Image 1: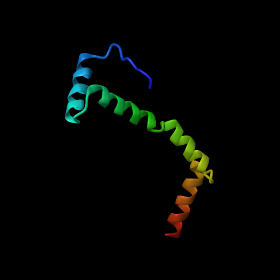
Image 2: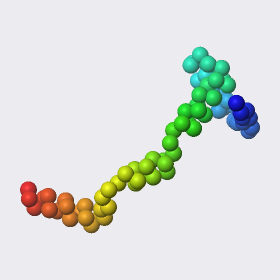
Image 3: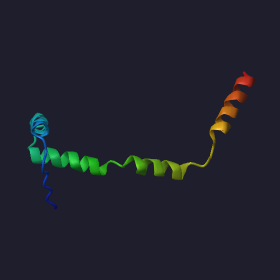
Image 4: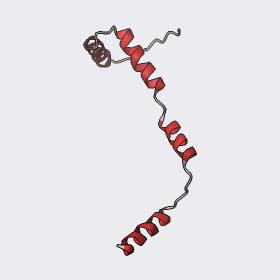
Length: 76
């Protein structure tokens, strides 16, 4: 298990984290570890976009979409 030190954290941020940890009946260390592990387990926006793009089978341009909308309006 690795150790992480956080320097230069503002007193306001530290106080708020202590309050939140207490509300969750956790130590500050346990609360911070939970936050960091959840953040690490959450895919980044870039990863989500890449996954979606890898699954896309159709390539449409804005003109294609506008044309389809116009066609749909004409059909009424």
